[in-house]
Image (cartoon, rainbow, N blue to C red; front, side):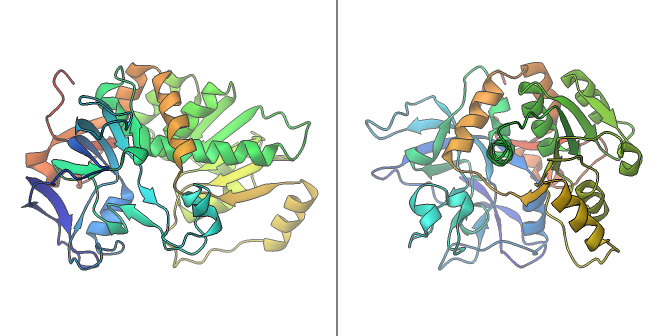
Length: 354
């Protein structure tokens, strides 16, 4: 079978290579790949900036945004041949730490977790792979190919979970307006979940053309481009930052109103210094009861919440997020950004009628 692999830390080492077929073993389901989502993390790994191969190996099978179809499943696993599933990315550490011990491996405290396609575990970028049933999330059959969006949706489902738990610190907290920075897949999915909560939703992005403004409008939200400083009077109750762009992060932290919550979901590259009035920010945050927090990854609760959110979303709108479906044979094209890209996927050609 074919698999996309890299040598972590070695730029340009990605290749489509032949690998042995996975041998079904007790406790594992055998999965046939349907689609693989491509994101910035994958590009960082390909660039040699990130990633770890499984212990004892030199190459890592790439891919963490998965959609697969069950070929074989253990009896009593809750899975059956033909089920569409998405694989959970992170696995708890072997110690385990207090967070991993209760299923919150997204909050791992000692860093000994592993991640499919990223850290010490082969990913889902192979034509067939094994998956523990406990880490296989069923996808609504009506979603079909769109189930490949489940993993990025789980990331924003976690963000919303934590936003709402933080908001509950004040019994009178009633959010009304959401601002999302970044109209990439994560930002648009964050806006989708905001709309599903009945919030007045605004999305800021630098793009003035292409599919993003229409996707936001079709969601029933308001699109903004230009300068974030122009939105100083928007006064959002919740802000979710999905760009990782240093100036946007700084501007957003001071652009919210009282009792506001700012969630940082975009990872910055670092290494750049910008002037920032720390004292002024501290004053406003303290006197305004503001919260700024970061979030990454997701646990089973968030995957299931993501599955529910996608199942009730408009399928036509979701399909607009997938801007390119690249056949496995032309895999290199998937990692080369082009104008108008939102979410790019690698299509394994195994789902009829998709």
